[in-house]
Length: 259
Image (tube, rainbow, N blue to C red; front, side, top):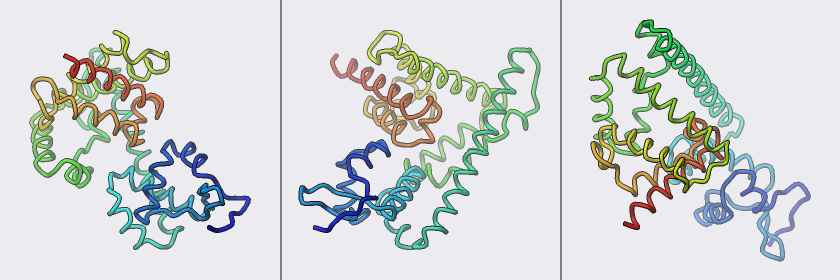
């Protein structure tokens, strides 16, 4: 056991700040991904500024969809923290720019629908080049899943693509509003949202149960991912909104397994 410094952060505080768990941080230690800077006589783990920077990089890489073995490999290669964080910053700036473009595109489409006028295809599709995430999709769900989704998307007309986007944005806005209102995840109101969400998922090719009702385990897994990945959480008003979606989908799943 080593002696800690006054500037170190406890494992409980670090778990709170990062919306993770002490168990996860202990697991990172067990696999050699993130060791505590010191451990006091009571067994409490503490982390200094260097450890916090390393954890920040771990969380950023996790948000990119990398598994823990690949994260470890990246950290081993990119040993200069300044260069690594600069790369992360560039990625975050790109993500922000993409989200801004998509927001503007959907707003234009929605206004055009309300006013009964048409938009040029390039206006509706700005920010929606789905091929940019090909590598991530193939890593998470396989090349067949990407190929099926890509073929489905290309067969759609620009109007259908725009409407699909509007449907998703409307659903996400309704989720966020319901979460902000403090709706009970098990309430009929929340469960109607869950059913809308499940029906929306069933429209994607390659979804387990597509065309009918998606597999319960798949829906529950997506709910967990919405909380774990900030890129999904942002669509539902942030982490708290994503937790509401997750809990509501869990309640939906329980109603199916209890039958």
